[in-house]
Image (tube, rainbow, N blue to C red; front, side):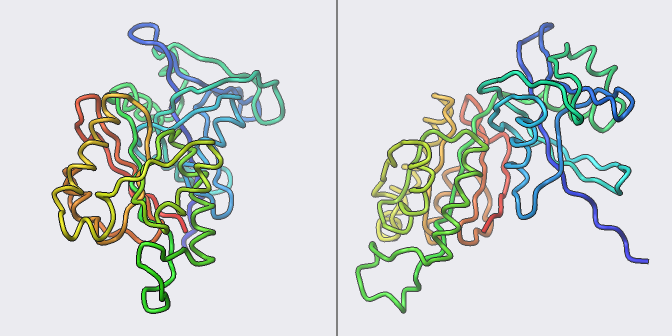
Amino acid sequence: MARQRPIAAAGAVVLRGSGRRREVAMIRQDRYGGEWTLPKGKLDPEEAAPVAAVREVAEETGLSIRLGAPLDRTRYESPKGPKVVDWWVGHVLDQVPRPPDDEVDEVAFVPVSKARKLLRHSGVRQVLDQALAQPASTPLLVVRHAKAVSRSDWDGQESTRPLTRHGRRQASRLTSLLDAYGVVDLHSSPWRRCVATLTPYAEHLGADIDVIDALTEARAAADPKATRIAIAKLREAVADQGQPAAVCIHRPTIPDVLTALDLPWRHFGTAMTAAVHIGTSGTIEAVEPLRHG
């Protein structure tokens, strides 16, 4: 008999307060015997897990959040089969009242000590403890530009080579991913295909894109040190300001970008993103490769 494919789900450990007053957002579901649990839910078709985590928290609690550091994945058996849940730390941006319905009967911020007793699954208790132990960090999303017209099919200047139709769809879908991490600062190579990759999100946000000459392919080839310095400055700014940011780069610049972030080589497909979580002292606390297309 073929093994049943696990149901993919995502959620967040949404914390507020500090010290002994630390609380976590929980929901009570009478249809599951009045069980208190952390907000999570199933991914929609073709939905990225980080996007699903933010959506499910909003639907189940009324909380608007941005994602922080990734947490361990949990696995368990549900009435519909095996389920795999990806988790993140969640940071509150806003909250609207959520009336009870057939899905959720009550939403509350619960003291952490009480929450541990209410959570039935040991794996979820471990995720809560992991979230509490996470050092403060802010995400820098490193984005390889979306699919561009091939070099052999373009007669214009290399700096003006545009995205393909598929690339424009990739750029549009990137909006929900950047939004999930609460990105507010946008940086890019000034070349057309990089700027175009971030443009849909910039328009969604009503923000400008900061273009950095040192991130172009030509400049990186001529002066790779300048590329590394530019990324190091972004890393420092994210650590100092605590503002989630994104930077769009070219494939040939990836080795220098990763070097500036103290990261080993990793493959980046078109429109692939890595969420690099930077601590307050500039340390790299976590890295997530995030595929979308």
